[in-house]
Amino acid sequence: METAINVNVNVPINGSGESYFDGGLAQYIGWYILGGIVTFITLGICYPWAIVMLYRWRIEHTVIEGRRLRFDGTAVQLFGNWIKWWLLSIITLGIYSFWLSIKLEQWRVKHTHF
Image 1 (tube, rainbow, N blue to C red):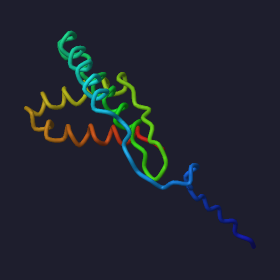
Image 2 (image 1 turned 90 degrees about the horizontal axis):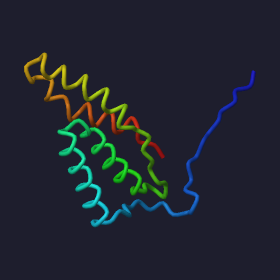
Image 3 (image 1 turned 45 degrees about the horizontal axis):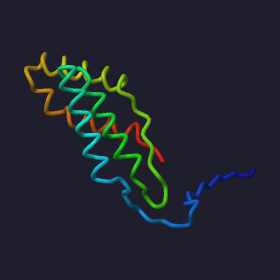
Image 4 (image 1 turned 180 degrees about the vertical axis):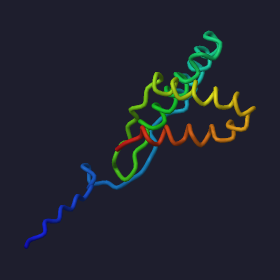
């Protein structure tokens, strides 16, 4: 009886195993201000959109071991979770809010890929 073993080795295409961030301060400030303006104008309803916009910018300007990260989360996905988390916080009289940053981080990592 033979056993087949598949081994996948992730080797950077450019041969460089460097990790770096290539975003600029002016871009970050611009996206941050745009997110704040949209959140203010919509009275907070589009806050998940602003979060996704900033996450996408940060993640897609990050390269780890020569491989650029990508982000596939959408504001609609986050909005559904945001409503659920907001309702749970109200029902538990704010106790659930201690888990919000962890839930948000779990959602962000779930949608981050090489």
